[in-house]
Length: 229
Length: 339
Image 1 (tube, rainbow over the protein chains, first blue to last red):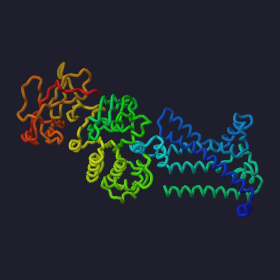
Image 2 (image 1 turned 30 degrees about the horizontal axis):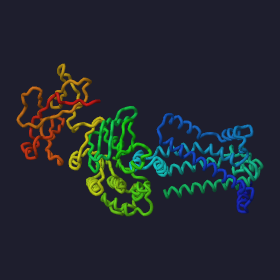
Image 3 (image 1 turned 90 degrees about the vertical axis):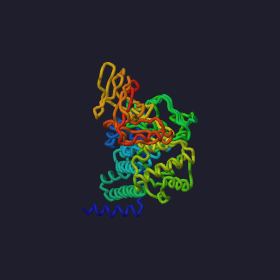
Image 4 (image 1 turned 135 degrees about the vertical axis):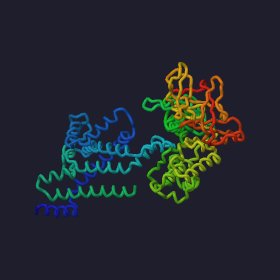
């Protein structure tokens, strides 16, 4: 028990003293998760809107596939991305293996089904007369899309926060695709795994506290936006 | 006639089922057109097609010669406004709801003047502008929805059952506001409503819809059957009071038919070949304000018939509600409706 308490004390020391190794992992995590979330939101929201709004053949089948992808194991995504971006893979020439961009690709794949599925659910739950009202006021297709997204903003916030939580806490993709390279691709979760294996609980706990702080900040923002919406 | 909206050979289907079939329809500029018909007759679908919200399966809908259903004609659609039956407001303040249409048309800056004027038109004071969408009663919400359309000063305003689910005060405000729009700005009005007396009062023309088709006359005199065979060439529909309405056997299966009555008669049945009679009781006598023609509603069992009376209002004075009268019709003039 003492080593846990000592770890927590050490954690605060590392954070307050600005330990470079700790902050390097924090920075890598923030960079890679921001990139992957931006990509998944940019692609996922329009796709989720189409899935929730439009009526086309095969819609239900696509919805089932997307829902199934919600439970994709991170190590499996890591394996697939690794296979594609390694030197022998079809995308090997882009040199993405063991880079933050490579991790971001994997994390975007992880977050995309979450964003699509929850956006589709939010759009489906919009009041049915919304479309008729907007069209009857002369809105174009683009204006209907933007207004519907705004009306579904709370649902989209939930989608974004859920996906961010999954991206921040994954280990498999970062470890396999990023390689856990110190100063370079070491993220908070891979650093915690490594430090725990080495018996360095203080660094592990410090990084765990930072992860909690980020999650808290994200949820605080959500609750603030919810009140304003 | 200066036509603002034109429909030609329009067919609309839903899941392969025909909903609307309109051969030809012209709406005159600055006119008030009423749409009457039972539930499911196609009034709402017709309004959606005229406003460009829905596209027909075939045929054309044009607004001053421009097609309303082409995406490139979005500017045309912006000159038409539809007020749906169910009031729906965006999850914003009343101000932003009314400003929405102006903003998507490029309106920027301080729109307060327009919004307060629109609120005033529908009988709401300026303090409503700050309220949220969920702080309004049903009647107030409907009036805000109307204000959101009036603020755009559309060339043509279509209203789907605008007073169906509102209190009397809201209904009065809505009626006053749309008539003002027509008087002040020359807005063409198309109103679908079950309030026949209101339509009779204000409309230049009433279009009767039944099963997605325009009827040549009022739908009041429709008999939906069942029809029974009387002889080789005649079928009959028995009314709840035991009287029978006779019609010539149709080529296809007997469905719904329109009966045309010549006039009211207080003297009783006539003995003329090809003329049949029904006994009924006058329910009401009203005056068609536009044509100054008295019309009577007569009950035969639980079936009601509307008869335009020959002569003027003075001549109608020999009849009164509660009086038993005879209605004359010719079985050969009963029109079968296509299914």
